[in-house]
Image (tube, rainbow, N blue to C red; front, side, top):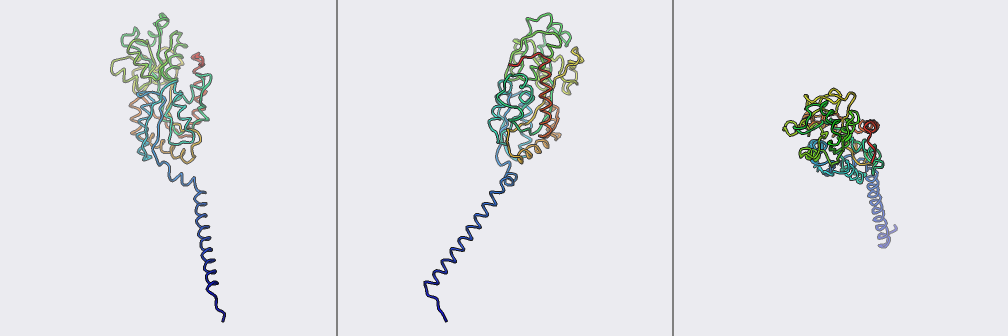
Length: 342
């Protein structure tokens, strides 16, 4: 019978320990490889896991701001994450758009915007610092609104025909304020179609333009339905006509420009959610689904209607097609209004 020496036993034990250590290392390495091969699944399960930032490229009190705050509250409840609304007005929405463009790949930064940044600015400026298609990811369309021609209560015109007659007779006395592409194109297109000469004054948004209209430094302005109705109901300003093809639900007594004296006239604006470019596909789908769900609820629709916005819900893919069509549509309106790009 052969017996093993103590040294042989020690060697066998060392080899066994080494083999076990190697096996453990391989198993641990394999687990890390497996985890590393599943980033998409982890993202899908973990998103969202922190708060969002809604960037509004117009001032507080604007229609876009109202839409952003209504949707933010509902979406925050749906996603179970806080949403901070940040107003970044200026340069016809360009400053806000630039801020979101700079957050490429970040699904927690959302631009709550309009046709101004995503369609009209392409025709209003010779060169843009962003591409409204390539630099953003469409998430959902919120709704639409029109604009109402607003004047002071003592303005010497009580309807659109009288307004046009006064404008033609007093070309040196007419100036209008605008704070978005919608308000600018609304005025310029009416002026062109009705034969009115007037000087436009740019603002960071419609609310400050209305402040100057109330103060008497402007003769007229086109305000989104929500802001317009608030001024009309308060008796501070009067509305002569609305830009949409149909009368606004919140202002049923205000005629359309087409029926009141400018046949063929129509301008309408829309609101939507845009993420930066290159966000993860699963995050885009989650955001789009959640946004469509909350905007489609009666509660959100009613709250939007109260500020003059009619819901027109679209998911991200539908909104992408809408933007393509809107770029062409606004180019036509800008050309018809004879607006020269800056």
